[in-house]
Length: 254
Figure 1 (cartoon, one colour):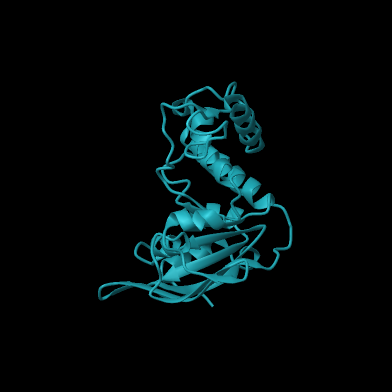
Figure 2 (tube, one colour):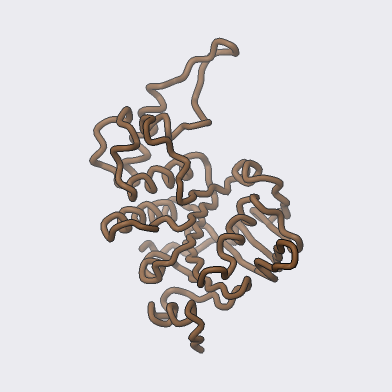
């Protein structure tokens, strides 16, 4: 893991609360994300991790609290607004279309075009080249052509494509929802490499993950959630894997 010192916070939540009816999903959450930093968000089922992620990316508006991006207070009304300032999310389903080519998936909804409406033409060769350069930077060196369909890729490689796409389109903060779920050890390693490449390029990365050992290996900081609150925020080097597992299981350590 690279040893860059995280810069000033790029993204902050201050005393954020979100309820659904009488159910408080997250309460009083404060969290900071810096460039060149990977944060592992862990906790038991129902701890509030997914709700927190959806507040961060604009899917939910908080009932109370403040969201700051690059020092400015913002209130996102949709994930599209969050994406417009550089907050990218990669969900478990990835939003990739298996039958389409790599380059069509990479630029899906963001195609490079030339000419004026209604006679615009796709700049296919430019998009092909950009796709291959970026995927190779993510370690996908076995790919022969950007015209290959996504369905030839393994689960870990598809995650790497999604992460690479988010990085290319100007993301400053990358949010990952269970990126290694149901993946093999080898595929988990592929995703870990992609996460570290995104971090090294200057992104702040937040990962929701149940694989505690993997979180401990790739993250700079680990945030443990419990009953909708941040129970503990610790530097990776200050805790062991077993200590993190104990905190997640409710066996609290000092």
